[in-house]
Image (cartoon, rainbow, N blue to C red; front, side, top):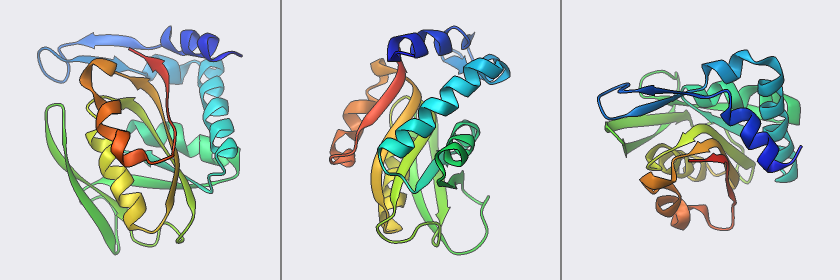
Length: 181
């Protein structure tokens, strides 16, 4: 399936929810895509193929919807899965990173022993908006001693400038958006 065919197939299963979580925001609801077995399988297969092509040994999923995409992709690629979670959700010794997002600020964390130094990591999330969450996750991955293999997002909201924000943080690692809005 071509990249354009995949993007069209997946986009057809994503619905807009206006004024959620606050007025003026249009929430991209992926629940219909997740409920479509063939569409979800196509997405997971694509993510797994990218993980393999980039030599990723671990796939990071960003809380919360990134978990849903990254975990089955990691399994299908024969890689490990690492959750990057919101503050206070993980036990043990943690790396923490504060960040800003479209409508507030937050802290994400990863367990300090989640990666072996030099491991190649693919970061997966559902939406790239302003880039704050992904940027913070890249800082965590590197602080833990891992190497960034790449970033794949289901959707990029290009008008919010996330790609530009991440440019300096990616190095040679690619950033792929399956659907660009």
